[in-house]
Amino acid sequence: MAHITLPDESLPGIVGLFNFRPETAAPLQLLAETLLRSSSSLTSGERELIAAYVSHLNNCHFCHTSHAAAAMAHLECDLALVDDIKNDFRQIEVSPKLRALLRIAAKVQQSGKEVRDEDVANARAEQATDQEIHDTVLIAAAFCMFNRYVDGLGTWAPQENEAYREMGQRMAHTGYVRFPVLQD
Amino acid sequence: MPHIPLPDHLPGITGLLEYSKETAHPIRLLTQFLLRGENSLSEGERELIATIVSHNNECKFCTAAHTAAADILLGENETCEMVKQDIDTAPVSEKMKALLKIARLVQVSGKAVTPETVTYARNAGATDLEIHDTVLIAALFCLYNRYVDGTATVAPTDPQFYLGLGQRLKDHGYNRLPNGYDHLKKQNQPS
Image (cartoon, rainbow over all chains, first blue to last red):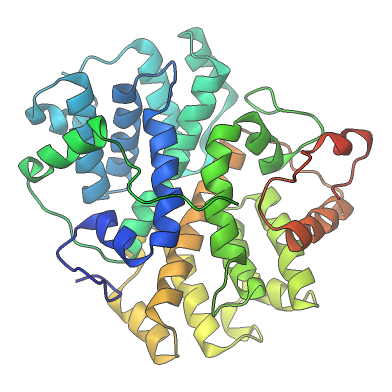
């Protein structure tokens, strides 16, 4: 059971929290939409892999599995490949550029200060652009927020990968924005 | 030197939010609501949460900026310093101490927050909404701190800079200034 009383305890992970606090749900959903689905030279599949990988490093089962399922939906991979994300990407096809960006993301997960000049130089040597390096750092940082939000409030998560299949397809193809966003 | 080309006149987070306005928009909306929206926690109390997380993440820029904002909002500069050193000695309510301890756990990991720490906060008078907002503010600053340090942004060493920035955070909150930030090119102080 979550640490706080949610209006609908049947909703797992961040979905239950969105339902509890629509005012924060709106910008959080817009942030996810912008980071993972807006136009970018990194594909949505690549960006979802970064999100799923960081969530795995943070040991957040809900975020990891749901974003892994979204990545599989984008990449048209079998859901069985989800576990490969925890296994250093031995089967999923990962370009040298994405591999260098994933290394930066793993550093960000530990601490921003862990990202060294050579990590960035390595990514640049694989043709990563400034914008791609920026986006990788911000996606990794954002999932350090999402993961803490989901686990810090003790939400529940379905265990089996299969339970995330439809959710991943919805995240990939319908997107993240479900509440109207209040403008400033 | 930052890992990516950022405007010289905008150090720390301020340059990143101009570099990528599309991602800055939802981050600003979220921060403005959490730290300046209507809430049973005061703006100063919420800045203390931002500060302790930034301090424990050793993010110099964010720690100095939110310390300055907290000091201005609280009208003194002792409480924030004590919160950073030892929550239990700080002159804040028992409820606030309990929430700051939750924030400190969120900084480590979401999983570090136990039912006991939450029960402790609730017994000290914290509501579900306050517990929720504390966790989300702490999580948000785990984003900011990693964004700021993961791109190796510059943290000015001049304390005056942060006094100016803290004042801007009090006066304008977290929304983008309507006319942008070009006026700062001519001076080294935010206003």
